Length: 82
Image (cartoon, rainbow, N blue to C red; front, side, top):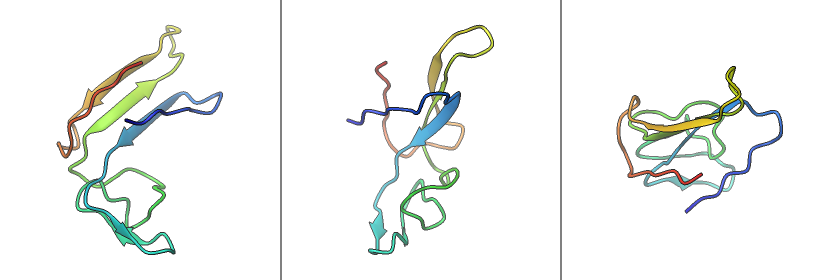
């Protein structure tokens, strides 16, 4: 279980799980799925397959929305509880 706090002003985001990761103390390494170019702290999207949790906050209709997407493939079961 993970809780995610986003900074004030955040409008959207994507989260994904990674599997079978191994990293050196320098933060370099590799994951079998969802890898971020060998970085521990992702700077962009993960490599497919990666199950995604996506959210948008305060959209043009003043709504918050979320979904689970398999557009980048499936690597782990995922659920969202707002």
